[in-house]
Amino acid sequence: MVHASHGRLKPASQDLRSEPAIIAGIAKAALPDSQTDWDGLVADYDSIRDKIEQVFPDFFDFNLRIRHPGGFRLRVGASNREWDTPDGKAHFIVYPGTDEDDHGDDGPLTLTTVRSHDQYNTTIYGLNDRYRGITGRRDIVFVHPDDLAAQGLAHGDRIDVVAGDRVLPGQTAVAYGIARGSVAAYYPEANRLIALADHDPESGTPSFKSVAITLRAAA
Image 1 (spheres, rainbow, N blue to C red):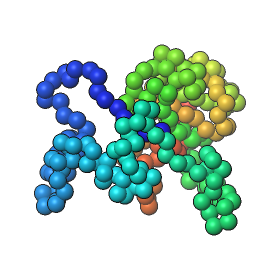
Image 2: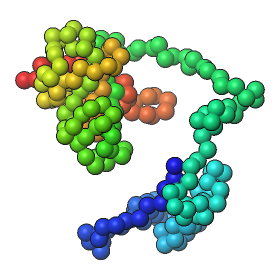
Image 3: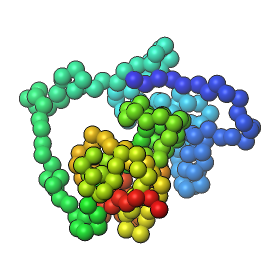
Image 4: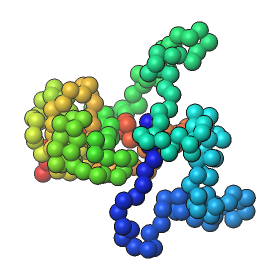
């Protein structure tokens, strides 16, 4: 669903700038010879939506449809059991390399970072996570019960998460129905476990979903 949104709070300062204004300012500074009317885009958001419509056909009549109460729904063929393939059928592909494990002896467990329900990207609006039954806190590490037992730990223990010389201290272990060998913690808090050099060599994507770790009782 695509919804329109409008600010309802009085700005804290007249010096506050919108996100489009910030992006346009960066663009003007980085691209001094650009022919794009950055100030015009910031002055009229309809013109931004016109640009989106030009490059993304599913956003046809964007400015008209966004003014409809409740917004509009983008087509997702799979939700209608419509498969955009030559034969009209769903195709399942096993991607090569998914069984690879290049962690070596770095750690017996693999950490993935996740966000809570009350979170949008790195912006945290609340401390509740109805997805996983967590209320009022984010110092949580989700671990399979057997992995906790193998580490000599138990549900509710205070633990440190260790990745090489990087440590996320004082977390609370939560026994959870996650796959054995896998551990999850919230980001951006767990980002400290990921070094700048920890990224895919081809895409440059940081290893937020695959960090070799060990767990230990907190000091």
